[in-house]
Length: 105
Figure 1 (cartoon, rainbow, N blue to C red):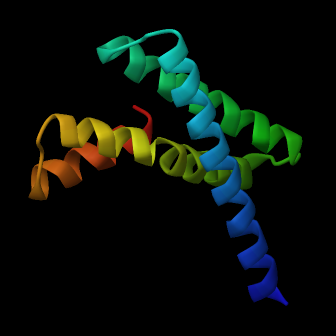
Figure 2 (cartoon, one colour; figure 1 turned 90 degrees about the vertical axis):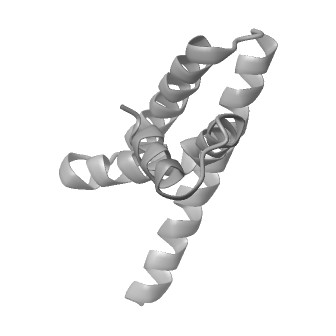
Figure 3 (cartoon, helix red, strand yellow; figure 1 turned 120 degrees about the vertical axis):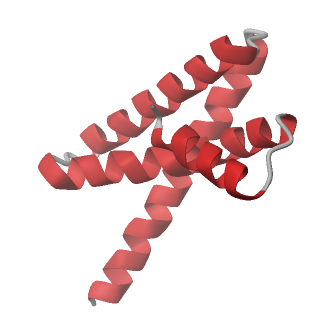
């Protein structure tokens, strides 16, 4: 039973993060943002959507923090990957950049 519940929660988290990311990237493109402005906008947009998702699910405390952190990392992954590729990062430099970028800091 716990495995089924964990799989369901994981699927929901993935879906909400992907939906948030594509909407945020689309909005950034519509606003013709680039560079630091795009980076800042996308991170804030994804964070806001993740926090709204946590509020909608009525999460609190450590569960809310865990949900938001995972949602943020998953939501920012395509954006961070795109940024790492544009900077031509590879190996340890790419791993370090991805970790920092996905943390939302």
